[in-house]
Length: 156
Image 1 (cartoon, one colour):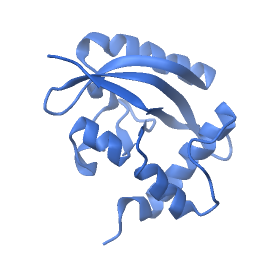
Image 2 (cartoon, helix red, strand yellow):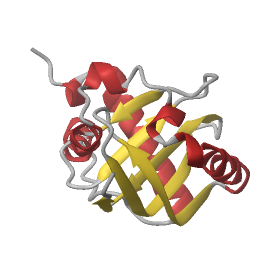
Image 3 (tube, helix red, strand yellow):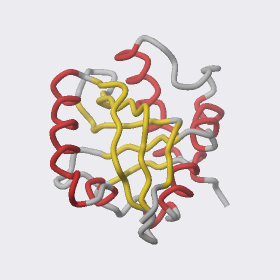
């Protein structure tokens, strides 16, 4: 059985995530070795969260590494059907939408924080979040990605 990170569609999307991050922020998200499958596996198994959504309306997660899946208490099939806005509690969705528009306009933002909710209703604060536009080799907008190394579970 092919692992998620070995699927051609995912390998190619991971390259867009990694290339866009490097182009927009001027640094690497993970150490790059030129082997696309290795890089896809490293991103999928990273100890920090990496998620992304495409350009559909509403945007739906099209990538969530294992750390993100565990944090949101969802498997790949569940999380890649989730409208990304539903990862945030209703009270902060407007702030989230403004932030995503700012990213779309500027290319990326750093040091964002917010409150998110898992499938079972656990609330957690995400911290030191970087959000960036995912662009292809022709600079076409393909969606947005986010990464963060820190989160804190909140008392309900």
